[in-house]
Length: 225
Image (cartoon, rainbow, N blue to C red; front, side):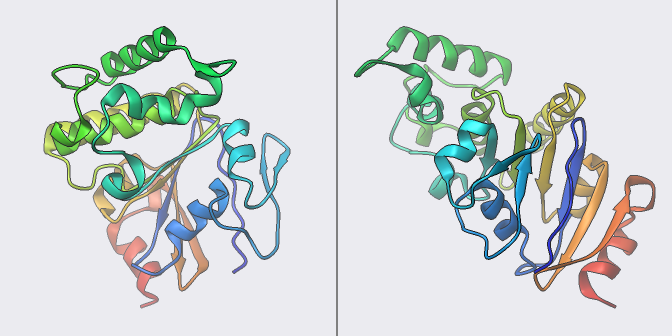
């Protein structure tokens, strides 16, 4: 209720809160997976119609979900096919898929994110957790996002992959892409965020600039103590 905030170009805005605070629900509403009861969501002054997932994607909103295996990937498909799932409208030529463009796009982002795989067609189920998460990121970066929402971007990945994902998010923000970051790891949220918005029981209860975003201050707002 009464959720109102902005994410500006070049910012990483963190959403903090305990389980059930409403962080993922906010992300789903912005992305169009859930309809909102009231209010307006705008991107670069254009109004995004609530619940219109296709329109929201075309406007440039991208969501990396919190559960990559259930929500972010088709595990039995290859990395190339997973990357192209978000791009079917751009890879289609009449009734056919442009296989050459599909492979070139996947190759570009596999190289950019340093995804380790035997081949672009290897099932993503055979990849490590970190490389699977990079495939999810590659799928959405290939759409050239105008707003990137990342929900638990480093859950279940090793230290090396976590560092690479952090560096990627910093790089994307420096390039001017606004990022909304949801993470249950407070050190990650504090280190990456320009400012942190704290939710509790479905409401915004505070906002902290980076300089004031200590674990103590964030936890105090999260718990209401």
